Image 1 (cartoon, rainbow, N blue to C red):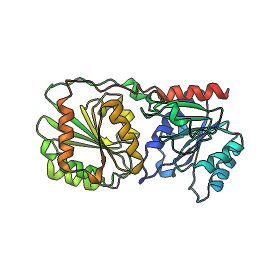
Image 2 (image 1 turned 45 degrees about the vertical axis):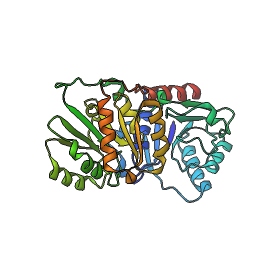
Image 3 (image 1 turned 180 degrees about the horizontal axis):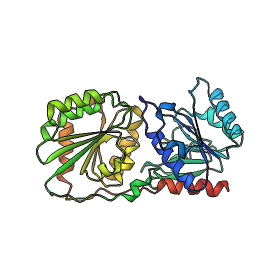
Image 4 (image 1 turned 120 degrees about the vertical axis):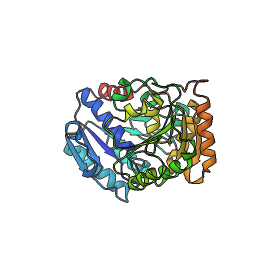
Amino acid sequence: MILMRCHASDQWGLGNLTRCRALAQALKAEGSQVAMVGPSIEMQQPGDIDTFVHWQPLDWQNQSTENASQLLEIAKQFKAQALVIDDPRADADFQQILYDEKIKWLQFDGTATKPMWAHWILNALPSANTHTYSTVVRNPSVRLLLGPMYAVLREEFARTEKKPKLNPGDISILLIFGGGDDRGAIAWCLQSLKPLLNKNTKLKIISGSANPQNNTNLQIIEGISKEQIEYFIQPAHPWEIMSTCDLAVMASGTTVHEVNVFQLPMVLMSVVENQDKPGQAWAQAAGAKYLGDWTQIHAELLRESVLSQLKELHMKNTPALVDGLGASRVAKVLCEQLN
């Protein structure tokens, strides 16, 4: 049994939960049972009943000791062999309590800035390296899983190929800001990119059902052009939509790994503070244009960045750093070392 502790909410976003689902499915394929702790019941999807043997909502408390004790008690109840922690609130005090109890766990990380006691540390950013972690690792037995090859995605991304164009002159721009609250970023992008839309240039927008901005966004589209904009709410197969696009305008969160499978040029911006370093990392490694905090960007800069990336479509290829097989790789590492 492997127990997951995940942080997800409408405000925070659903990227952590999405990758935990993908890892749980890969672990199940390796013969492990998986239970989920943290997210609310409302965040369950129909397939979760087959993926997780147990789903327990659990609020985060003010004290690290209390959070760690609660998790250890649940782990004891289910006789968990190991934990998976995908929650940036798991600070050094929280981790040291787990370490002292001699339970192994995988820690998702994207900063390498705080002391870490985990047995496995996973950072799928292209900037992740062993030198950076040498200053924060406290567990002498740690195994580092670093770089985009360990990006945990749903298996369908590995199986879906980029779709050929029916009309070489058509351009499809993907607009995506995660599965939670886009905080107005989609509405701003719609207005900013409106001058670029024509019969050959269209927008494909992917939004989560938990996004409270959906109605507002749809009203804005009504005033622009339904023919040039498609708005997908919680699509069952987002990989199919991504595979038909030429360029992505998006938040620099976990979804960047999904988009990179299809080698899309990217114009990135941050919606929350922890997306700044990932945006910079993707700019350096994959030629993305990172513009910073979306609330500080001028509409003209966004349009210029999109046009610049479009001009280079036939001049250079975006490197495919993610192959979609990371979930299977991570699951094999965990299961091999636990057995």
